[in-house]
Image 1 (cartoon, rainbow, N blue to C red):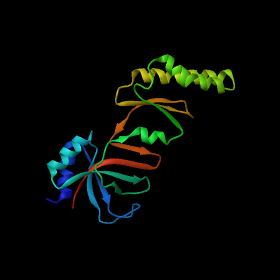
Image 2: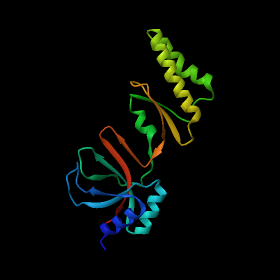
Image 3: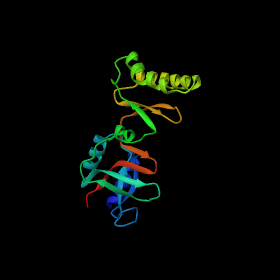
Image 4: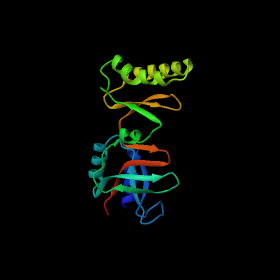
Amino acid sequence: MTIFEKLQTLAKERGLEVISVNSGRYGHPDKLKPAVTGFKNIRDAEHFAAFVGDCEVVSLYRHDNWKFWEVKSDRKPELFDMVDVYFKDCASLYFLPGEYKNEKDFIDEEIKSCIEIAENIDDMIKVLQTKKRVWEAIENMGEDEMVLEHIETHEVETIKRYVMHYNEDIHNYTIAVVPMA
């Protein structure tokens, strides 16, 4: 049984996905090899790699227009921290557990300055409605989550802070198990 067949069989049994990793750059096919992705956490990926043998856990990158993934880094991968993603994203604000001690701190830091620059009552009401949803989400978020406020749409969502896979615009990142050879 080839490594590809072995990975494909084991991945299918565990509900994981087999993808193709490229040795070439910019999505051009060169020395393709299989990889398995879809793990819930790094430990599961490491156990799978050890079980299969001669495999390692790596970070992969793929542009939307590319058919194949490429290895992003040769160092041991860590979960992707969504703070790093949203810190450079000027279209969203993020809030972390413990950032505000209480509702008054939140009002002082997040609401007062927004109301001061509002141009009319309707804008103030929008700010207050959005910030109310943000505060409610902050109160309910878990220790491993973060709250996002999307500035243009006024949408508020709670997401996992550390993830195994994410998409950012046209860029895709995942953690996978690949054969060493």
